[in-house]
Amino acid sequence: METLEIQVNERIKQRKRDAKRLLRGGKIPAILYGPKTTPVALELNKKDFTNRVAGLEGSHLVRLKSLATTLADRVALVKEMQYHPISGDVIHADLYEVDLTAKITVNVPLHFVGKAVGVVRGGILQPIVREIEVECLPLDIPQFFDVDVSALDIGDAIHVEDLAMPEGVAAIYETNFAMVTVVTPSVEETPTTTAVPAEGVVEPAATEAPKESES
Image (cartoon, rainbow, N blue to C red):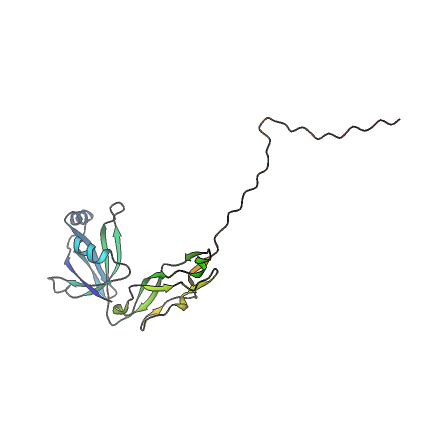
């Protein structure tokens, strides 16, 4: 996996209004943390981070560039980003410092490629999960997995055990769950209608035919 370099500065004040001030000034508040890392408040260049990192799919490593020697060249995983509910802009980032020699657990997106034979026959491709959890070294994190669905017929499925893993990467799961399947299209039944008398109208009672008088 490619490691992207981003410029960071340590952030001293951490009041809520300070975060808003940073955003107005073209900065993004962030936090660097990890199992062996004392949390450090950071500020990132909004334009640089948004253009180079925020729009990318999957998990990504970043190498910190800073004038502060305590931050320079530390490597972190972009663990989480918070977005503005209206503009969609990144308003906060969580950076998880990693040891490049120790395995970590991350989620990797799935790309379903090809046209299933079951779809050609009228079925519907139904993705069940959009990503899977894997364990690997930070530099071995796959950007995504291609899942070829071409051979799937109606009722068939591809399970996690069917997915080929690169060397050094292991999928994490307890059961061999299905990732994608082809289902039969649902057919809506034509509703049956029963005639209902109009309100206030009384249906006449059935009458028997008159009997012939006995002579």
